Length: 180
Ligand code: ZN
Picture 1 (cartoon, rainbow, N blue to C red):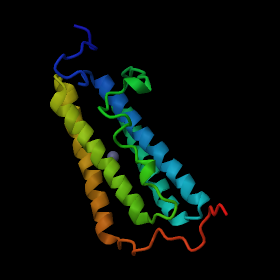
Picture 2 (picture 1 turned 45 degrees about the vertical axis):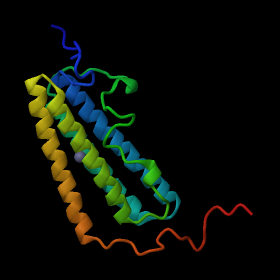
Picture 3 (picture 1 turned 90 degrees about the horizontal axis):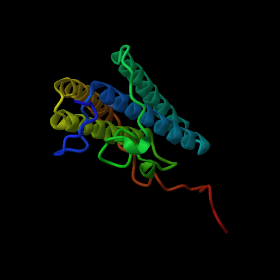
């Protein structure tokens, strides 16, 4: 039986450990790229505090991706074209959404965006664990889902310790793009 035989009941099911790890690395790296992208935007808008937090999140993502690569050991990982990823959504689940980024956003907002990304990643792995027919994939997906749940818990601790931004945080007294 070929490893890429698709389960007719769930065409998005991941059926090999190699495929699972390839998705995990892509997921982390896309998250990293997105955090860096938002951090760049924050720096452009003179918001270094939030940029620094996003760089930190990007670093965690890079470390996590490196761990995933180690988990692959000597396995040959498939190269997957972006349109062939089995996220079940258009974007990778852990990538933070640019549309939620605002140039005046505070570190609190950045953590909220990360919280959402980590929750989505958790959901992705939980979904794989319940849809794959490959036992090794299920075991790995459960393990990764637990890791993401830990990340979510850590971010929740951060959120608890932070003060939500005051109302009017997005009002700029000196707006950057006045057209007239
Ligand atoms: Zn994570």
